[in-house]
Length: 375
Image (cartoon, rainbow, N blue to C red):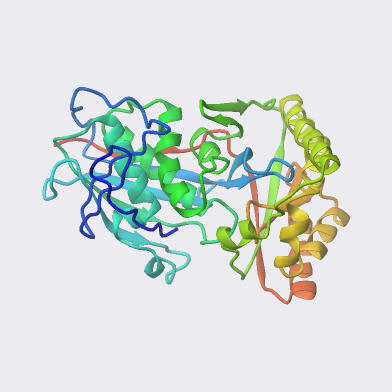
């Protein structure tokens, strides 16, 4: 979640500026332009905006770094919330993080930096502010974490997505969704690498295919409304830093493995579009490249997957870099039983305590949940 500040490069536009701990401004990378900045200095539409962004499941088995989906529960507790507020006490064009809280995990907030250049919400807010061309106003950010760190549920992406959405809405919702994704990607690349399979579904909702970065091209995958896909998310008391899990990836892949994984990823995309929950599950369970190298690093993961399938899940894999295991079911009727069996497997095979959450596909993505009018 905490992102290192980059070294200054005053001679070129693509740079982070070295700044005081708060507030700061950011010169956004121009390799992938975060919107053509508006020539006008936009007037604010609200005094404050609160936005929510959901958890995400990246990779979905064989779709490493290019497939992901958004998931949420009915109470919107499975995600992060950001309130962006106009702050006349700050220098114009800057962002400060006023507070970070985590009601369900009080100690988590103490681990996150209040330096906007070292916090995903701060980096994304600054990128969105600059993309909008805001020069006459400053913004304070209040971040409420609903997701654990290093869980494989897109914690950093949720913070970034909620921040970008809140800042954009504060000034009239002027940015295109792709620009919001790119604003969030500015923070993601500092934390877990340059990949959009978390931030894209966190912004857009639903299933998203990241086709390419240059040119930047996202393809939302619309599943039929009748698809009652639910996700059983089982998170053990164990952190799996993305950097460590990426270091475990194989450096070379055999052609046959590549062909097999490609066919499973293609089947997954087709199944999403057709609303075939069975094929979605079986394809998710069929990663032969990434999961085999990461599963041994998560105590009990192999047993957890077996338990989920035995309990009636359609498929099971590692969510993102882990350690959360995600099982898919059609409807929520089997969710409690599948989750309990997976929790028991983590305890018996991995000696880890774990919690289970039943979520559904979130088709909305980042959204505004409240506003405060200008006085």
